[in-house]
Image (cartoon, rainbow, N blue to C red):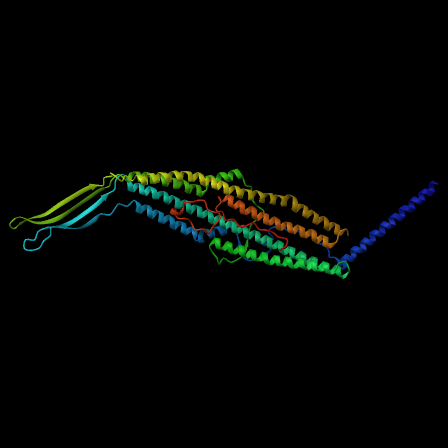
Length: 477
């Protein structure tokens, strides 16, 4: 009995092994059929940053190089220097002494044999008192300081504008390469779908869908090329060299430094040129108050001259040469400049509040930029740590399943497209993060072609924050 049971067990094991061998041979034959042309062998390809810099030839530009070009060519910087020279010239003019007056003087002039009358010349001069001219120079000295701060602000605007344009071009380069990879994947998918149709495993509907996707992605590539050209023109304009030959910008889009929000807020409210301009305007208003207080103190007016008096004192003898001197002052009896003094005090009080208003306005504007920066940082970290690793792992597993004949090639292409679409979204998130990071580190100064303001025009030192609109990646493009 035991011998019989042993033989039955051996027979069952043999049948089981034979079936397994037959199944393995069937799978091997099917895989061989795939290798013969039904479905191509998969060579894994993953998205990566910096592909455009590795493959493209031609001119290459670094950020430092573009910044130096902008400092040398951007027209707003010479404009700011011209404003400084003009302010210094106004300061010089405000402290110059009044010119003397000289003229002819004649009285009781008559003709005839006897002649007579008085004829001569005079010189008059106003002597400014109470240090009014010195206070004038002090007021305009604050304006010089304001123009110098404005020039410093304009330099930051230019550098930040170049950095924004640089990273805009860098992101456009990366997106274009990703879109080209997606278009190539779509072309492979269409080719595979047609092969499957030949063996009866795909219908016309699937062919049409694959053709639509390929055409859509080819259109997307053309649009990304236009975006890159537009971004390059923007960069060339900010640099101040519109004829700058297009090329490749070198850099690492993913290398975004960490940002300390509290430190950035302290820097913006403490070191911003807008705050410094408001403080300088307060000092100028205080100096104007002191100047208006001294205005009632009268200046000394001196007039002196020499004249010939033709009056006869006795026969054949005239008075002859005689001199005269006049000294006078204006008596501040009714007009003591009290209206201008009060107006200057009110302007000084307003200027004192303006400094606080500017700081609060900067905090308010920084808050919105910080929010956008924080959201962009969250997106970047989620793509880096969660989405892209999962998509890459899914792609790798699908390739393994395909190698084991457990998945079809269209499924592999679908996983690959998902990975590259996520890469496009990741690049857009990086670009947005860079835009906000540059704005915050650059004290919210972003427009490199905005003309520097004149001292008399600086009533609102805080200007608009001009950031590029966030790039939207649409899957329907």
